[in-house]
Image (tube, rainbow, N blue to C red; front, side, top):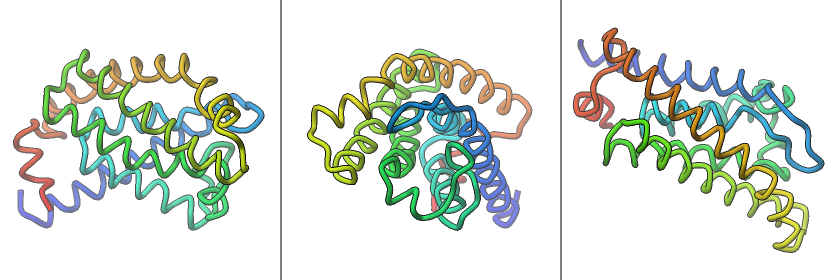
Length: 193
């Protein structure tokens, strides 16, 4: 595979996972300040399947699509106002979450148990980033910010971390067997920028 084909493959993979996250974002349970959505499941799947660098790039693409007005965020919303609003910290957090989750897996192993650890770490990062922006945008005290931005999402977040791990490792292994995705060491060489 030449460099041009490799770059095209990276672009397609990132676009695909940005689209998957956008679709999952529309699965939503409304709550007073921050809804429960499938976005974080999309982030976990992305990082578990394609790793740190491509995962973070896919989440940057996802956020960029939303900023330009594409209705990719929860509730078919889009626009820069979402990123600077109360829930924008979660979206910014997706980029760091994808990178850290993928990095943990790349530094250890792409196994179900390690994927659970990595996805739980990612869940914590997302919740912290989201809660910090929620607190400052709405001028909440820390207790209310945690009560609105973290506590309602812990149980669901753990369930999504396990689901992202299970589906992610299963799909990653199948994509490797189908030669669509390359093994870890070869993938690291190809995605080095």
